[in-house]
Image (cartoon, rainbow, N blue to C red; front, side):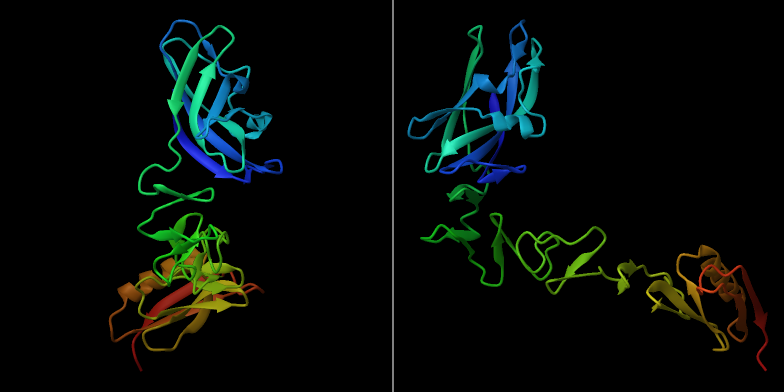
Length: 278
């Protein structure tokens, strides 16, 4: 048996600890080297603290993802992972996990709270002492004054997508954190409530723009005679411009006629010709 992951907090997965306690979530791997199946009911697991206090896994285990449960078994010569919730008294840190079922099967393992580089503990948060320090008040502070400690990691609040402007403030999908505010990743630009893609690509006579809150682009022909809008989502329009711009010589102008609907989107007809100058 081994503990592969530990999470400590006053609240985990929406479950809050009782007053004077905190929650420890343990992801446990149970290896069954025998022939008989082993039951993985959470009541068979006990945590011992560093001072010797023993606590049985809590009913809150049932609210975790993939919990250790009474109807869960690990077959003979197999292994299985499940999660436990343990309510620890404040000031007591988990040190070891012990398993014992009704038939006397036993196993035990040490609990490593802060593995890897995050080898130190500040309150209930593991941290890397090379990046952060724990104040006398139990508050994490970054050694780099330009960064902020969020969830035990130093981040830049001006650009971090998980902590934009403040810890725990993620940006929506497909958006970016720009100067501590929700914005659009380069080379896209905000238009209404969406990020406009670079619809022009490498077209030299095309400019991305925003038309009444909709992503659009402005197409100008070689001679400057055509200056129209077309919705960026309409691939037909883009294809037509690219085709005729590539087929005309540098002395010719690309003259395009667009027939729009009322919303300036999805033109039903696109006519382009190469016209000799003069």
